[in-house]
Every structure is written in structure tokens, then in C-alpha cells.
Length: 178
Image 1 (cartoon, rainbow, N blue to C red):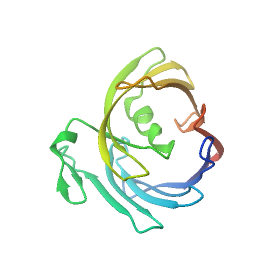
Image 2 (cartoon, helix red, strand yellow):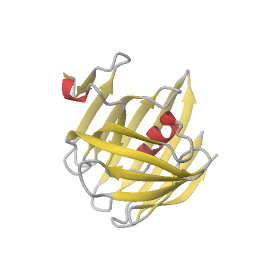
Image 3 (cartoon, rainbow, N blue to C red):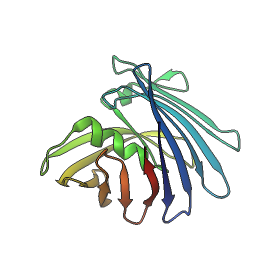
């Protein structure tokens, strides 16, 4: 099992994530302390870092169930979402962990880039929307992340396993690995 901790630089949040590979499934379990609210999530991924299942809940009683079948069918709280059919990754607004999914899954060479679309989960509303993104690997440990439907762009630093170490203005890693 590996454990990672990040601090939200703007929000002051702290995330504690445990990641384990059991029975051919990557399982992440996380607690995100946002101060006034705590979010918890459990996520399952394939060994190729493809998203399968997310259960997200808050201390205030909100809950979200998100799933992607092997055939690419997405469900949000049990209802099929055909608009998400072309997405593979999930992106949680409050966690740098989800940047690891495309970093690991795409396996980009240095100076290569890829456009993807994620199922973006807003931590404030639990709303799931499409979010087009680009990952451009600029060095062994650096990627430029770009939102394709806005002007947001950051160069993120990752460790040798693809986990965020520094996400300028948003997240910094406190501890990690194992």
C-alpha cells in the first residue's frame, strides 16, 4: 500500500490518500479535509489506470456514485450518461490524485501531447460535466496541463510514479509513496 498527502495551496485543504492493488484492481481511498466540510471517496481503476468506479460522499450527507463499464458506458447515480461516452478519465476538482490517471494511462514520451476529455466532478456541487483537457509532457517529471475550454494552464511536477508533487497555486505534496 502507498500513502500520499497533499495540501490545497489556495483552499488550505489536506488530502490523505491510500492506494493499493488487490485482486487486479487499483483501489484508492481518500479523505479530503476542506475545513468546513470533509469529503471522502473510494475509487477503483484497472491496472492500466482506466477509471471504473467512484463513490464520493460528504460529511453533510451528499453522495455521488459514478461508474464506467468496460464497454465505455458511464452511469451517474445509476442513470446512464451517454454524453460521457468518449471519456476515459475522471477529474476531481479538489484532488491532484486524478491528474495521475491520464499521466499513467497515456504514457507520453517527453515532448509528446494528448488531448483527452474527462468526467469532471465539482466538489462543491457534485455535478459531473465534460471537461476537455490537454497533457503535454515537457520533461521526465513535468507536464503542462491545459483546460481546452478555458484559459487555465499549469506546469505540474510529478514523481517517478506519476503522482503530483507540485501543482502551482493549487496543490503541494506533503508526503508520498511507499
